[in-house]
Length: 141
Image 1 (cartoon, rainbow, N blue to C red):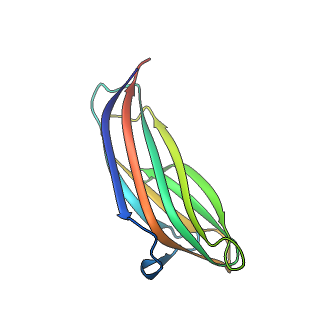
Image 2: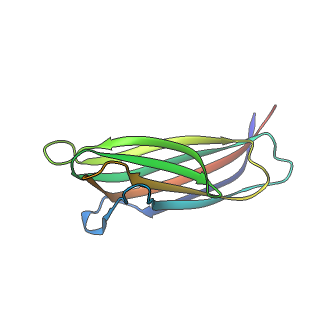
């Protein structure tokens, strides 16, 4: 049995839009995509925060390796990598990933999604949409 203790979501970009795109920064620099705050009340252990992100990406040159990260309070808790092809192949992607953060201490916690390009001489852009949501639940032992 679970009980919802908080939820948050943000959608900074609602649709695919080439005119409003931006270049994904080259590692080690990160492009910040979205941020939410989840509140964990006192006496909410055990718990988990289920996080889901969707990011629209377009390959511009080469095959970029994009590293997506999720941070809680500036500490990395999850990452995944996605290859993004460009000209002559697939160019537009909606990358969706989810993470689970377990037994988070009480208080307000800021979750942030970032992206960075790990491959030299390639380019990939954020073209939208971008969405990020979190659902905190108290789980029973």
